[in-house]
Amino acid sequence: MIADMNPEDIVGDYKEVTLKLFDGTSRRVLYTEIETPYPDGKLIVSTTDTEGVITHVNRSFVEMSGYSEEELIGAPHSILRHPDMPPVAFKDLWDTIQRGEKWQGFVKNLRKDGGYYWVKATVIPNVRGDKVVGYTSVRRKPSHTKVAECIKLYPTLFSLF
Amino acid sequence: MPYVFTVSPDFTPDHLSGWYIFNTWLQHQTKAAIHLELYDHFQGQRDAIQADKIDLIYANPFDAAMLVREKGFLPLVRAEGESDEAIIAVSADSNVTDVAELAPGTRVAFTDDPDVKLMGMIMLEPGDLDAGNIVPVSAGNYVLVAKHLLKGEADVGIFLAEAFDDLSSMIRKQLKILVRSQISVIHHSLMIGPKLQDRRAEIQQILVDMDNDEKGIGVLTSLGFNSWHKIEDEQMEFMIDLMDTLNT
Ligand SMILES: Cc1cc2nc3c(=O)[nH]c(=O)nc-3n(C[C@H](O)[C@H](O)[C@H](O)COP(=O)(O)O)c2cc1C
Image (cartoon, rainbow over all chains, first blue to last red):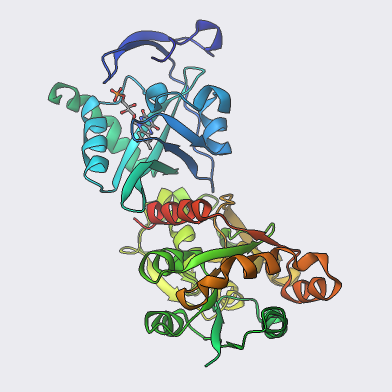
């Protein structure tokens, strides 16, 4: 369960929607049209357990998401889920990493303040011994062209899943 | 047969004698015969690793995955405060102010340092550049990368940040930094191979204690380091996973 977003945290005019999460719960999210540009030269890194619960974040993750490290550790990774992201993207992510493979894609993330930021994400299984003990995602700055393609494509994918 | 120690070929030339001094110190401390074998190029070093000729290595992060997962190496220590960062720079005269303004066909100068090249290519992605659409300009060292930019033979250069900062001020003044990476978790590592692993804990302790002793401090200084920090197995696995995500 992730807490609903709090209007007091939001910067600027916002819209409101209730997202249905994969685990059957739902979350009211508040979102604005304010983009935070990806910081040059940085990687945004997080690690989850096998269920997608956050176990580690780096400083850039904290800065870009707007949440504190304490709020993030132990939260499901869907805490960043933006309503403009089609569920099929995350189905593909989970299907891929659960096969033990690398997933790469462009993701629009939701900040605590209702704003958003685009990333190019790569997610891999953390294999220790012969066992998958969790997953790591490393995000880098995406190209404008690729983001523009996703802005066109993603709205057409909502009917798929 | 002595054990064989090698150093990632991207070491700074100024520290060449430092590595010989370190090797002598290490032999003295461990009472083991260790021969320092240096390679001019990564490929020659990798061939030696593949042929199981190496027992100790100060390894480039790019090779860590192969060393651990294919060759059974384990981490010992890293140099405190040292991490590998990359810089994307252009000539100071260039009109380009942001990587996003670059276009396919851009001439990119780089050395064969694999981790720096990897980080650099990632920093060029926002300009839709990739290995398939750049014109590569390979250079033997970072001074030559700078010279390619100054002579107009390349449009952008990929530098190890430390090497860029060490360029003469005259050269640096003629260059403009577009991006400097702030990754901080990618670093070289001193690693130990299967033949020496029964002595791993002991050698690790000798290295961690090195800055407690006057002679040890002198040897560290000749390498440009302050002290060695123990690397936990999980820290190494984390760096390997991180490099793996970047290598795609
Ligand atoms: C390592 C890892 C990193 C993830 N990073 C993100 C992320 O940055 N943003 C996001 O919306 N979902 C991310 N996800 C996917 C979420 O777990 C989740 O599937 C997604 O937010 C959609 O929510 P739902 O699966 O509950 O429908 C990540 C998953 C893993 C395993």
